[in-house]
Amino acid sequence: MLDILVLAAGKGTRMRSDLPKVLHPVGGKALVQHVVDTARQVGSERIFIIIGHGAEKVEEKMAAPDVRFILQARQLGTGHAVQQALPQLRDDATVLILYGDVPLTRAETLQKLIAHVNDQQMGLLTVNLPDPTGYGRILRDAGGAVTAIVEHKDATDEQRQVKEINTGIMAVKAKHLQQWLPQLTNNNAQGEYYLTDIIALARQNGVAIQVEQPNAIEEVEGINNRQQQAALERFYQKQKANELMVAGATLLDPARFDCRGTITVGRDVVIDINCVFEGDVVLGDGVTIEPNCVIINSRIGNNTHIKANSHIEDAAIAGDCDVGPFARLRPGTQLAQGAKIGNFVEIKKAVIGEGSKVNHLSYIGDTTIGKKANIGAGTITCNYDGVNKFKTEIGDNAFIGSNSALVAPVKVGANATIGAGSIITKDVADEELAIARGKQRNIQGWERPKKKS
Ligand code: UD1
Ligand code: CA
Image 1 (cartoon, helix red, strand yellow):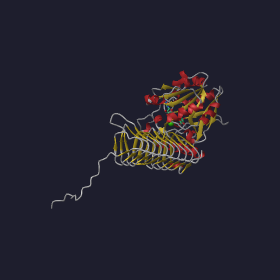
Image 2: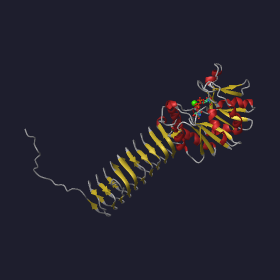
Image 3: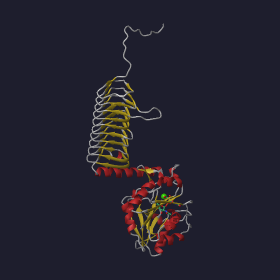
Image 4: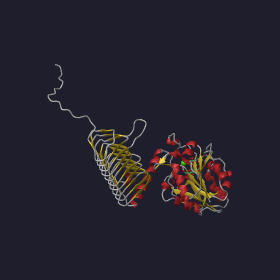
C-alpha cells in the first residue's frame, strides 16, 4: 500500500516568473506533471500534492481522479510540508516523498527505494556530488550506517567535506512519520521544520536507513532557475534522441532534436536537424523528415517525405505522400496514399484523395478532394463568409486551373475542368468545363498616356 507525497509549495523565486515553478516545462510537460506521471508508474492510486505558492494554478493544471491537494498555507519547511499530509496517510502505508521540481527521477530508482521500507527500515536516495555546496550532507557512523542529515547551513566545516548529499527523496512507513514528525523543532539555522531531521530520529528508534543512488545525477536534480531548466531539458532530449536511435531511427544530429511528447517510429526513419515533435506522433517505416519541421499530434505513413520547413498539426498522412517544403497542414487534414502537397500550401479540415496534387500557393479548407485531382497554383477555397463555414467538394480526376476561387458551398464533379482564373460560385457537373472570368479584349493602336512637358 503506497501513498505518494509531492512537495510543491515552494515559491521558486529564482525563476523570476508569474508561473508557479512546478508548472514550468521540461520536454513540453510541467515539472510536477513529470513527477505525477512517474508516481503513477511506480503504482500509487493515491498521490498528494502539497501546494502553497500559486496553489490555484497548480490545482487547476493537475486535477485528476487519483490526485489530491493539500494546502500548506505558510511554507515552514519540508518537515512542516509533510506534516500537513499526516491526517490523510493510511496508517500501514509506505509513504514515498517526491519533489515537484525534480522531474526526471526514474520509476525503477524509486521502486528500489520503496523495496527497503518495512517496520525496521526506511529508504533514502542520496548521490555523491563533486561540489555538494548547499545540500544536506549524509552523516555515517564508523560502520558506515547513516546516522543523520545535516543541512549545509547548519554543518560544521568538517561535515561540509562530505560529498554524499540528500536528494530529499525518501520512503518510509506512515506510522513512523506519525511518530517522528510531531517531534521536529525549527531550532536551526533557517528556522524551518526540516524533514531531514527524521533521519536521526529513525536511527534513535532503531529504524535502519537503507540508501539507494540513482543511475545519473540528473535523475535527482531539481530546478531552481532557468539555467537548470535548460540543462535538464537538454538531458531529457538526449535521452529521447537515444531512445529513437535505439528504435532504429537516424537522427542527423541528436543534439538538434526536440520531442515534447511521444514519438513512435517504424524502421529506417530519417529525421534531419531542428525538428520539433509535440504530442503523439507516429512515423511509419521509411519516413523522411527534412530540417526545421514542426510535427504535432500526427501520423505519417510509410515512405512519406516531409520536406523542409513544414508545419503539421493534428493531421493523418498516408504512405508515399510528399509534403512541403513550406507546407502548413492544419488540424483535420487527411492525405490519402500518394498525395502531394507543395510549397506555400495551407490545408485545413480537408481530405485529399489518393494521388491528388495541390502543389503551389493554395488554401484548401473544409474540402473533400477525390482521387488523382490536380489543384492548380493559387487555388483558394472560399469557405467562410465571415460567420459560417461551407464545404467544397472536388471529384476524382478534376483539374482546377490556376488562380481559381471556389466559393463554397460548391461541388466540382469528377473529370471536370475549371479554366484558370475562374471564380466558381455554382456547381460544375462531371466532365464539364467551367470558365468564369472576364473575357479578354485586345484593343489595337492603343496609345499610352504621355507625360506633359
Ligand atoms: C532540501 C533538503 C536538503 C536536500 C535538498 C535537495 C530539507 C530540510 N533539506 O533542501 O537536505 O539536499 O532539498 O534539493 O529538507 N517545500 C514545500 N514546503 C516548504 C518547504 C519546501 O513544499 O515549506 C518544497 C519546495 O517547493 C521544494 C522542496 O520542498 O520543492 C525542497 O525545498 P527547498 O526549500 O528547496 O529545500 P532545500 O533547502 O533545497
Ligand atoms: Ca532546493
